[in-house]
Structure formats: structure tokens, C-alpha cells
Amino acid sequence: MSISVVVCPWSEAQARASAIRFNVFVEEQRVPQELELDEWDARSWHALALRDDGTAVATGRLLPDGHIGRMAVLASARGTGVGAKVLEALMAKAAALGYEALVLNAQTHAAPFYARAGFAQVGEEFEEAGIPHVEMRKTLG
Image (tube, rainbow, N blue to C red; front, side, top):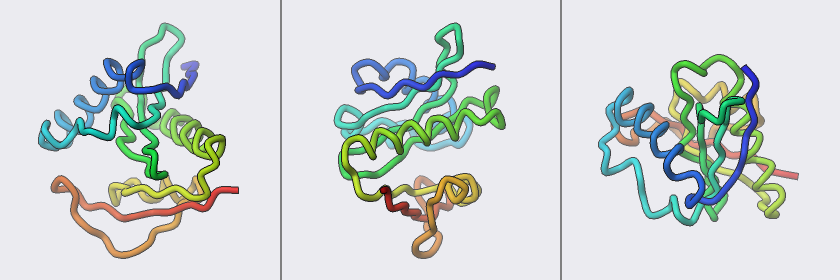
């Protein structure tokens, strides 16, 4: 599967990113729908992983304060490296914007994925939307 990743504003990403997030977070993980979309979407950069036919299979966002979040990969694309491509695109955008560090709240089971990208856990496990998470940080540059 050939994948390209675009980083764009919410106005361009909204339809495809929200569909992926709804599928992964609301339907699969049972996150309450009212917690999924928030006021930060319009102020963030969004990465979309696209197949050759333009179908979006993964997404993530970069908030203005250097947080990465809402990383979601459709079940059909998991294990293909697509999540790493989305994360790389968001880190590259952050570096281009001059961010010195990145922070994210990883679902605990996904912490090794972020660790492979250079993120380190800080603090203890906590619950967010009923799911165990850990805070992770990475210095850029």
C-alpha cells in the first residue's frame, strides 16, 4: 500500500480526519462522542495519511502548544507503518514551526510506538476518557 501524508489546517482535514477519529475512538474505544471533537481542532495542524486513491487511513494533530494528539489509524491499515508516517509528518511540521519540544498523552499500550520515535515517558500512568495513558515528551533539534 503506497501512502502519502499531508499536513493541513482543519478546514481541509475535517471531513476525513473526523471520520477516522470517530471510527477509532468513538466506535472502537467507546470514547464519548462529546469528548472527541473539541475547540483545538480549528487551531491545530492535521496530518492525513492517504492511499493512492485518496482514501484517508490515519490522522493526527499538532496543537499550537506543541502537543501531538488524536493519533488514529483505521484497523485495516494498522501494522503497515502508516502511524509512524503520520507521527514523522507532525514532528517535521513542529520542527519547521520552530517548536523546541513535543508532548503527547499516549495510550499506555501505544507507549512503545512513541518511544521508538524518541519520546520518553514522564510521570505515572493516568486515565483519560476511561483509557490508561502516560505523558511522553521529546526534545527537537
